[in-house]
Image 1 (cartoon, rainbow, N blue to C red):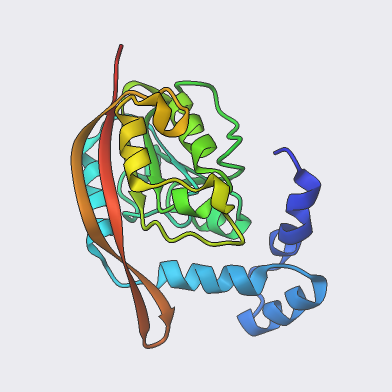
Image 2 (cartoon, rainbow, N blue to C red):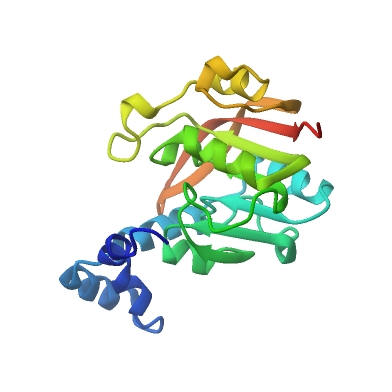
Amino acid sequence: MRGLDAWLATEAAVVFARRDLPEATAARLMRGAGGSLPREAQLLRAYRDAPPSPLHERVAAWISAQPGLFLELGCGLGVGGDVARERRIGLDLSFTMARSYLGRGLVGDALDPPFEAERFDNLLLLNVLDSCRDPRVLLAQADALLRPGGGMLISCAWAWHDEVTPVAARITPDQLRRALAGDRRALGLTLRYTVEAEEDPVLWRLRAGPRTIHEHGVMLLALRKSAD
């Protein structure tokens, strides 16, 4: 990983924390060490304890229908549960998420992934386009890693965060659709995909607290990369 020192500045405390510590004790220690465990623990609960949602059902069904090896960029815990977990590799900057991923989790930057071109049969970009530094770079990397004829599944809530994605780097649903169809003017990328299925919105649920559930309407695109 490039910029390893910067990554360790926030992740080292999580990496080296004992996993058998009570959560409250670990949180106090991490706050004192400048680590990110309290934030990561909160995110982990939001994903892990979320109730079932239509998005997870759609993703699981799509994965079940695809042969070959999957890569999920910005994987979190892995949307769709543990379906085909033996064929799924997840890449995430968060050590906590990568360690908890339901397939084979690896720590790494989705904008600079450590894989060979056209290495994967299927790509998953689930709720990550609006949660990364540069969606254009993420799309370009995903396209480079996917073999011709491979499948890609994209979901996005279009819920931008000022501290994550600069306004100038953000894209729109229309730009995404045009770019995937081959319009280089849309995002400055050369992409050629066929839309096999589209649903908008699809409900995605996250747990915000013991009695609070957040519901997001996300766009879901099932795509096939041109084999030419």
